[in-house]
Length: 323
Image (tube, rainbow, N blue to C red; front, side, top):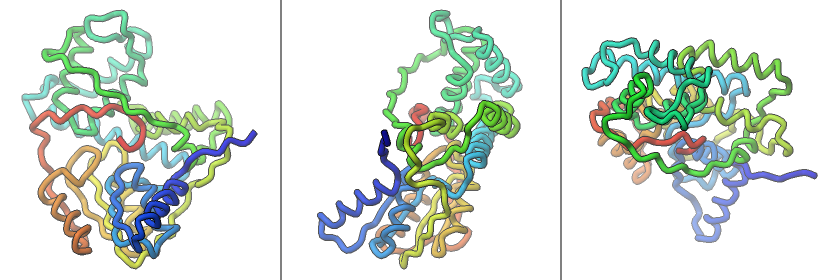
């Protein structure tokens, strides 16, 4: 039996159906995270219908499965390095003056041995994958202060000073990803090799967001409808790409790749952290708004200064793509 599943091209077709129903000649589209792949597929399949296209925290659909997993691990490790740098410099960090990497590695080892549990609650075990996923979720904000407090609480087996409600889990379908990516992993030996490659580039985090999703597509019972390729985007309107320098999920290298792949594209770099650029600062908001309203792209090499995460943003749970 053949199972048909959704993919970014089918979503793009749905968007164009909405356009036709509204009687509009063209659309202005804003896509964030996995939505940027939908935006690219719309531009590839309906280039004349694009008035404006913003790709915020962009997916690179040209990567092989192996390169996808490795670059995901690299960007997760980069975010971990930024946490450690902040802890070394800021006394607000609960692990200030300590080797954050060593603390995390010890926690990971305990998790692998089945010895890690929620602070003060031995009945709630925490495995290594759960530890990395939770850590990665804090990088989305980023919420370094809360993460440091939680890592210290895990290490000391004591509840955090201020208990936080568990973040709401947002449903995510692995099938959506499996319709767009061919994982090309057929044996246990290949799996082990790919896992080691991720570990090599991410000695603390061990894997990235993609490593927690792509494995669900191994032996998937449906053919990949929209396999990896370099999107052929030839829109008359220029495309605006926006990405953070230290994005934990869609790495900056992806943004520079996609910028090169699109004939008419402008890259806006946010010199900060977290996933999602548009609402980061007055600079990012004004640049995107000016493009969407007036069609004016930022000049080549445009950058927006980082806004230090001095306040505690909400913790974004690990939810797969598009969080």
